[in-house]
Image (cartoon, rainbow, N blue to C red; front, top):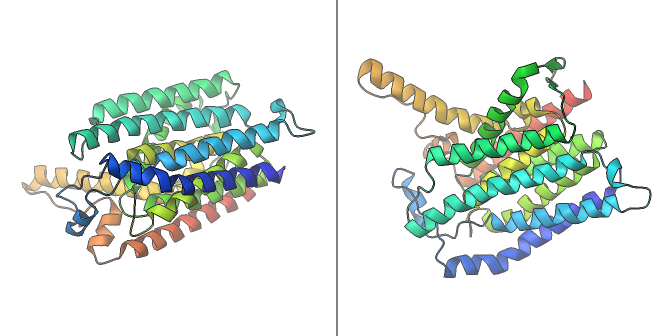
Length: 340
């Protein structure tokens, strides 16, 4: 594998993201694009009121330019041809999909900051747009020649899903993108967890000599690390739905680009647990309210990072523990890849 484009992707993404903060954060402050905090959340979060949001534009620009520059570098390197770059179309389609999800988040954030409320697009509008993007992404892969319906199952064997592959893939993409969005609830959590996930994907891409996906993962890791300079506790800027939906698209693109979407069970373990905590909380509350006339909750608050926060954990402790769990999940995924 050519290492220079991979390193270049990480360096450009990190550098541009980190440096953009010096310019973008003051601009967001002047425009008064601040976060509105819900009253139902932890009371101490009210001090975050007004902190600039839509900061995800920092790593969107950094990662996008890094991917394009490094991909061009690899494609034009001596002895390399565009057609020989493994996963070339998967890189381009994945980037387009991520940007499309980021655009949905941007519209959502823009409505929030203009109307000064914590609700932007309604759920139906978001779902329609997200399903449309997921379908177009899979259609693009199909047209590019990626027509296999076989999925690798960790520690088991390949399974051919046949006609069920694409419907399940669409549902999986939309679910994963949204649970990445849910994970963005405290300072540095989503960017830290995604940084670890990106390193896991980078290790697998390097093992399989998938140049395009390695550059993609390196750009994602660099962008998350550059953003953490501004987003780690106490955060000076939030990524907003603009950033979290883009990150969700990046994670999904890596999983499908490497043909290991089921491995997100491990590599997306924190995202999945965060999403399940919301579903369990809502389902239990509705069931007990209907059955006993009074709703009951399993967690003090969902998503689950708020449960630990309200149990006395600091934001930095939650980020550290969740990132460690994510690292363990990535190690399990890498072990499973070795066994394929």
